[in-house]
Image (cartoon, rainbow over all chains, first blue to last red; front, side):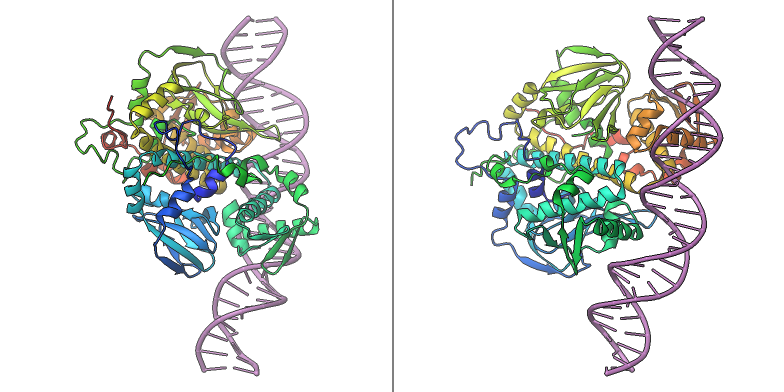
Length: 267
Length: 267
DNA sequence: CGCGGAATTGACGCACTTCAACACGTGTGG
DNA sequence: CCACACGTGTTGAAGTGCGTCAATTCCGCG
């Protein structure tokens, strides 16, 4: 549960779960993705605004709330003994977070608002009640968690084996694809509020080297900046450089959504 | 699902799942861990022997079998476009694998026998049937997957932020603790069938550098070799070097097992 | 015995880090 | 209005951890 679950499902969406979701109800009328489920739970939930820099989840603390990120960017991170910080994931608009923090007795990671963010708050109890009413939901959760593990595995491989040049490229492509799903891109450009320090912390590099790498990418005409807006000038070449797997992040996510793992919501 | 589930539960065992496992049966007579569940399913299953180098799971293929590793070491890995190989995890005696391969339409990782291994084979259908009889099992699975994701997150942080010296130390400590649980250690030493190449592939290093790092560790009187047996000469100092988190891998796994996430087996 | 996989070691190069200085924009208070 | 602090971006120079290439040794095994 380290990235929003909705993303989770879409990322590996070409792999559908072989476990029949609701074996005892073959004629379920509606498939609900994990995302749908949460959105439904969110009806009537309150919305809060988090200032930039505000910690919403603190590693080590107990939490009992899920969040839906309506607008804004956040990051999930952990502070290391060395004083360094490792960002495990960014949370983009439209994505959900906080489940992992609820599951473990103490949250494994902190979540901080990178930009001012507006969030819907869903008490964990609401989900638990839904689970009691519809135990099939647990399979959807299970599937989400399995996907999440798979994604972290990919990220592990990236970090262990890629050059800085490829890592930065990969991150930009991943962000683009994830934003594209929510209609937050224009052509091949998007608004990018991350500082070079954040990028460095996410990729296991130094800010200095991220800066140099971005310059190289710009000099190679692969990307371009305009303030906080970034443009991917040569999508295909970028993909080649970092071996970006369209198949796992997916470009045509929506068509697969109806087949996505989920559960019949049964009142 | 990238490491054996049993280990999974023990690793983060100090974090218990807040979701009541069987809310509708408050008086359940017996807690069953995920490991117990599988062992029960394994009754009467056949046992096979895998020669060293044999691939049991092939990334990209469809699989319908779980395995219990009775004896032997295996590795879960992925071959990269560059030709390199990234080992995501090692599978030690007593651990379970193959669930992830069953879940996804195509297995994400391959699993190969590092040494000759003897394995119990459990058809995935057996688990599925159990799930239909006891949907609560899904929550146990969910919990396992969430733990797995957490572990991969830790590994990601390691790879992104640690030196070779610390990474090798960390791996040795982790292997020691995992083997200790199954009584496969003596004092501070254990049998280590991994080649330097395997270690390198797991840690994102080269064999040459692993070799040099091991030599450094030996010269610093932290470890010692005797054939394929390795001794951790100064456990505490090793822990300090790599900031080994006893809390997440756990040293006193057993006492917590009864409280471990599980489900009432009802049939 | 000879073969092949694994361990070991050296020389060299490069990617990335570290330290440091400076530029630029923004906000804030005098 | 300017002064100043502060966060962020940018660039340089020097150091180093790790990779690459290559040769040699060790060891188990048919």
